[in-house]
Amino acid sequence: MSEQLPEGVQRREFDGTERLATRGEPVYGEPTDGEWRAWNPHRSKLGAMLELGMDTALSGGETVLYLGAASGTTVSHVADFAGPTYAVEFAPRPVRDLLSAAESRERLFPLLKDARKPATYAHVVESDVDVLVQDVATRGQARVALENRQFLADDGRLLLAVKARSEDVTREPETVFEDVREELSEGYEVLEARRLEEYHADHLGIVARPR
Image 1: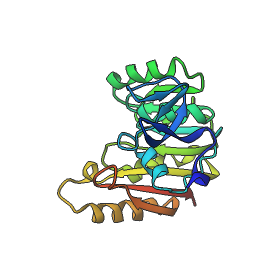
Image 2 (image 1 turned 45 degrees about the vertical axis):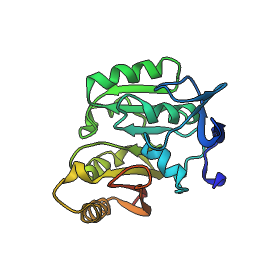
Image 3 (image 1 turned 90 degrees about the vertical axis):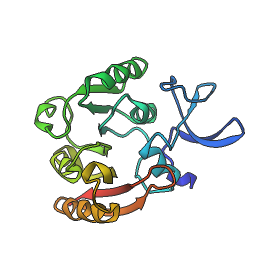
């Protein structure tokens, strides 16, 4: 599976267990080994996608727009190995932690914005980003991805973590996932989809490219 890992992400041993790791300042109390810090797939959907061997097309050094950055758990790992990383988060409280994570990461740019309203940050985020990572706990997750497609390069990738319960707690996750995929097809071609159950209940990981 190592061929799927971006440059700057390695499998290293922490407390006798081999885990994904990036090089950077610790953010959320994760185990460290020198400059390296463990990337916990149970706390990171993107970490889970990498752990499961999904072809994220991340190679290291790319420009990333990250939607739903929260307090920076995952996006801090991304900024450890990617290029300019724009981190959009709507809630003021987690953004304080995100700003703290960004202090030691000159390529991480926190934005207190709503991912459902890309016009509010279009003047900041460069166009033709290589990768759009989305992990937003809101209804209309496919719509958010479609609204933000404008930032993605023609050969870019969408890495989407769909949370079934955020769409509708009353419906079967599989039905929710089908609906999201169908709506997503308005602007994207799904290349790979995989349930993240081993790490995140009722989540689907999707890799897609713009149509």
